[in-house]
Image (cartoon, rainbow, N blue to C red; front, side, top):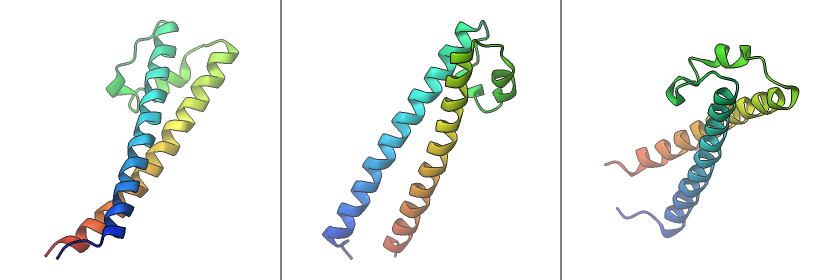
Amino acid sequence: MQPHPAESGEVLRQLRYRHKLVKVRTLAKNSLHNISISAGCSLQKSMLYKGRAKLEALKLPEDLGQQRTQWLETIERQDKLVDEIESWLEKKAAGDRL
């Protein structure tokens, strides 16, 4: 059974939106990585979540400390939104299975 064109368009819009959210999340992660490097602590990009306590413990100037906090909040928000969209997409895909 072919998906309805309106449903296909809806899925495509959600995929594009997810892509934009992931781009913002990547920007935030890269920015945090740069902040950690400037503070003399090179966090592996893949260690962002595991090394969060280390990142939060860094002594930073006030402006960088605020940026760190805001970037971490941005990542959390983007993760939540991406998860919601992926859940929605999985439900749509499950309806397409025979």
